[in-house]
Length: 113
Image (cartoon, rainbow, N blue to C red; front, side, top):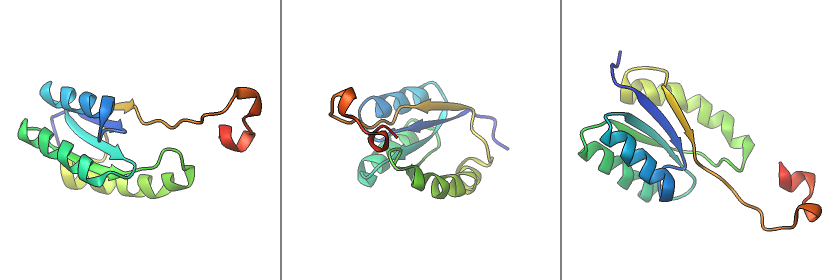
């Protein structure tokens, strides 16, 4: 069982999410981060976190595609156990996002979903 706190940071491979993940690691928190498609960027963030003396791992997750959630949730407990020695995390930083460039009145229900 781990004694360190663990944060799950969605969209943690670049930008604000990367900065959040690194800041958490600097505060002594281990990090599980998600990335959409830039696996190399995610691996670099994991390496930076590990260089700070914290544990870290990255999992692929496309937050714009709800059909990908089941595969992510299936991997999550196994990844937590293998990396951190537990099946739970303490904090969720829901940073990942998507955007649609259309006027609200023209946005369909499918686009909104």
